Image 1 (cartoon, rainbow, N blue to C red):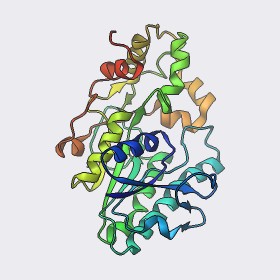
Image 2 (spheres, one colour):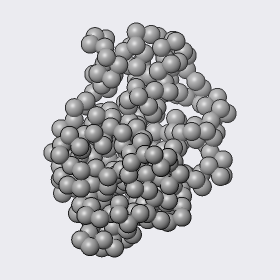
Image 3 (spheres, rainbow, N blue to C red):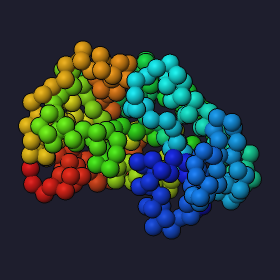
Length: 301
């Protein structure tokens, strides 16, 4: 297939592009208009609502991963607006562009997040669970709704609700490695909140599966075995051969990180990949301890 990819320079996109190419697909990387013109590929500007028409010619599938990071800096009013706009406006532009193509793409795979469910404590969450409350839940609802023009035009639309994507190359795990290697890691808050995680390898695998399968609508992209934060911290420290004895109390998390700290670090989301499993996806790394050994290059505990 000829596949258009946004967010190609991000953690997931940079791993997905070579995977698709190796599988024989032609990947067209759609770059922001502010990027260097020395870089190959067509350009778009989601804020201005423009995309180079040449980028869409003959496209059979679209993977839309672009969006401002939710984990960089405190959530000021301006930052929250940027996070929302980068997802809602960008997705609407891609969806409307897909709807007007002739022939239309067969599939539009859009990133979303398990933030859709909000802070849900012990509740087991599947794709059938209702949305939660909070900033991220609101962003995810509007993010997914922005793809409606493509769906209404008959394009198969998949919303991949990513959990915490684990890779030493970036994201949450990369930020955690230094303090944990120094023996300064530990649980966050009570440590009882559930963390729904997935390795980068399985996140990429889930995207490829969504492209070639008949999946449609929301799909939770998480490993089948979520763990509590205290267990996550213990297993990470064990994989690194270090102790995990310095917890960060919830008031300190909120003081240091504000609303972002509460929603990203203290909220509990016990999410199950029900539709991904029903569609026959075989996880490469279903258990966290083995995943850490794989990611950190340690064969033993």
